[in-house]
Length: 605
Image 1 (cartoon, rainbow, N blue to C red):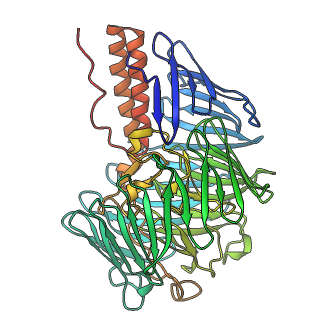
Image 2 (cartoon, rainbow, N blue to C red):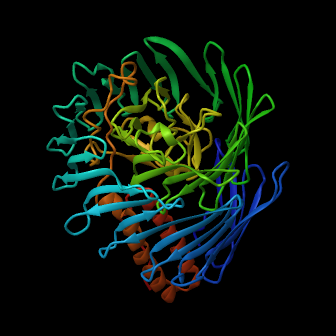
Image 3 (cartoon, rainbow, N blue to C red):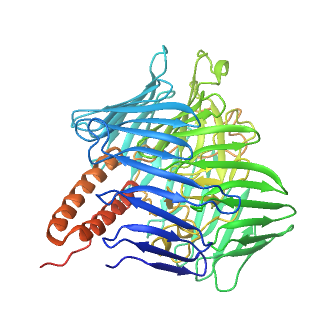
């Protein structure tokens, strides 16, 4: 049959699997001895995953139903999990058009509409906010984004986008500022942004395409950056004003030292025969301990910080010297749906592509923050609770987000183009927030959300520790994620990202299109006189990003057609194996992986 029946690793222990005769998964037993049972329907689709009670962990079930309601045939239509229930509704063409989520007893609805060409032209958030996407020509290239909330007039986020033939944005206008222009070299790499403006940035690259320098103007030296890499393309130097860090690694990708401003400040040690970090030698010292699955369960450094995981190896609780810091709940889509920290409960809602779009209060269900995206680029944050702090608008504040080449936020501006939040990062993403910032922004590296209670970054399938540049748990996709299950982006966080904590993606210098921050942002005023950062470079391909979900669905349809033909020829077992591969390819596609090769070849009869 070729089914995987066991995986053994010095880092994550041994996990075994059991199957039915036709090849569908029945059970899994992990290195902690926890058995998870699965049931499937007649079409071999997972109906239920049952997790047992173990120690202090209560039993729970995640269930999936299919084919319900109008246009639901062939699709998952209801998901029930510890956070609540999600209803998925489809249009006549089988496209997911609406998510109705009940989280911690509160109901939220997110919906979308499509253009005649099949591209999303409007999203409606649970608060009633709408986000409209304007397009030109064939309807592919985005020309503008705007949002409307309640009785307020529409707020323009982006407008007048222009592009090169291969998709990079050459010009655009921010809704709170003037126009900006970007320039590229013959390899499609960004070489200049905001040419002639106070926030001008110039970029240089090594011959292999890795980013070398970022340079501002004589009046903005704080945005300057210099990066260097070792012979294996791993980050060896990250330099910015007031901070220089150097790194070195062993042959297994484990970091050995972090050298700050030319003096050794941290030395890393690992458990023999593994990639598990055992200690970091600093002034105070820090030690680590793990469970059988390789999950970090203790960090001792003056205090004892304890981490608790559920049966699916997801972090559900953190305490320090017995005092709770945070608790976390997840939905059936492997997304964090709720957390409680410092006595405050927060609920999280996601769009159709997995982007976080809303935060709500956990005690009353009121919307606290909303996020506006295009593709994977975060463009703005709306804060319905900010009230009178926004000039001329007592109902809602919209803050414009300006990102770096990878999509990491570095600056936020308000409707008057005044900087309200600013951050600078070290090589592995630890942020220094300017003390004059007046809003809170928890987004960090693409796909990551900062938890103030722990200092960790939630990265969907795992949590990332920017202090060590490593994940807290092994990669859930095993060797497919690389030889070292704990490292982040193959130790090249300047040129690569990991949107979901399990799949490194290289971001070419020419991959972006939304290039440019506001030309007149008040960098020298309340924020910027200190650390200062580069202008925003929200990266997104106008067609490829917006079409990602559609293209992945089209590929899935083709793959399932192949599976159907195979099943008719070779039987149900062959179909079941093929279908699992098709949905695994679909998941990788949504994360941005290249799935151009067809399904694995099948023998002929």
